[in-house]
Length: 272
View 1: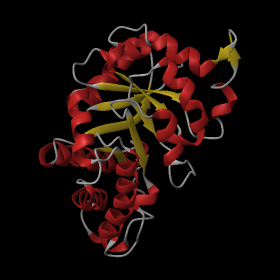
View 2 (view 1 turned 90 degrees about the vertical axis):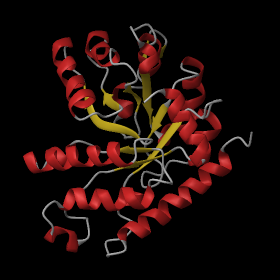
View 3 (view 1 turned 60 degrees about the vertical axis):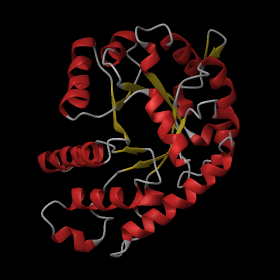
View 4 (view 1 turned 45 degrees about the vertical axis):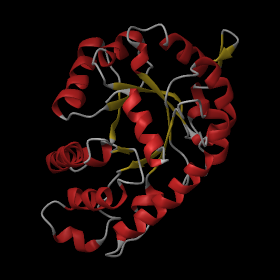
């Protein structure tokens, strides 16, 4: 998917909501456990109920890998269902991969060619040659960890190196990599005060923003400092939407939670 297609979808739906499909079998409605593939059936119901309210879905691969081969098959069925029925939706494999070049090439093939995701999250700690293999794919996007929403982010990401925080050096360096126009960045909503500085470095890039809702991030603050002319934000909510109810009406309840966020987003978007 091209960036322009994503921007058009955001404007059309008046939404920059990304829904995280992080399926925990201990949390989904118990009646689904009787089905052959409860993970896929849960995802399918959530997707059918919310696709008009969001522009992206983000399965975290750990929630599928934890169930072995069955979980991986559920992930494959989920992405196939999305690409077949809702091709306008931007898909994110939240895998946080990153390794030496030939290994990264294989990771990229797995997510971009085999599973046909639009994007994948990566960790930049190993540097240029671990990220550039992902950037080689046309109309695919690599979403690099920059400043995350967890408490441990302060262990390394904000340490001062060369008179600037490390995360700023990571952002600046990544702009010099081949095909860097295919980069997006993860910036946590709980770090809203940092968005202004981040936008000075990557003014035009899309930012994937976790941490709104369950983690306490403020949507209004994120938009105040992080929104650009093309909106440039994908704000993720996972637990707050998909686990809105554990009853048989779980998908309807999820849609109501998603609509609440979508309406807040529409109010914060430019009117022209």
